[in-house]
Length: 251
Image 1 (spheres, one colour):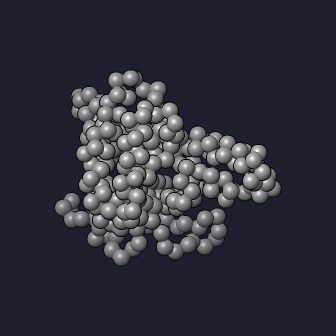
Image 2: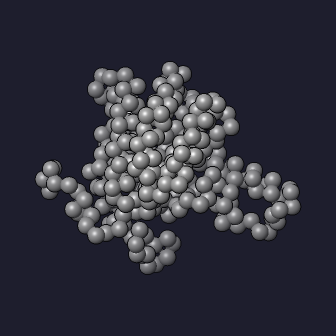
Image 3: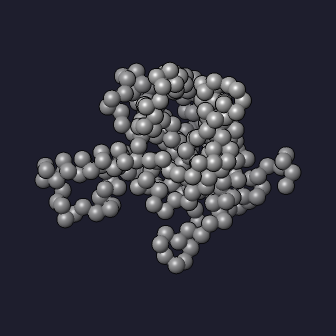
């Protein structure tokens, strides 16, 4: 295929995944490879996020989850954290109106209690403004870790048992799932990680039980619609049996 030919012609009439999650990795290495500061890699990563959100909406994907800032990222140098928080503030202030206009609903998962009040207000503002939108749900995993999410769910279950609202015998896998940060969201069909790394890094460990994983060598700032469509094409080649013997049809 010529480079100028859009990959969506290969997707054809196949259904796209209902829910795609992305580990946006490689900003720093992208910058280092070009002799640029890490902050420039993060800024270019925001541009890649804008492209990907637009492409997801155009392709009819229902849910897009992005790993924007992990619970472990607080261990990074203070200057880099300030840069990342500044990018988050600018993204919400400058891009929220466009997301709203495009019919994107923003959802946040992760721990909020210890965040700076202005960051927490911005996240809440994004959710509230876009609450009625239904073209695409953009789930932002911020101050998020999957182990921490499962621990939070376990504490909520323990509190319900202690209050007499839930019996121990009634606790099942479905019960735990219902206490996660966003239990109404479908599990991701496809998880993409950029930069060539091949691990989940504490991202959606519970929800990823039967997700298809696609690892791409592209650093996140270079990720675009063609890369997204290539990952979807790879996803469509997989047989999803969910532990059974027969592949399930559809996405």
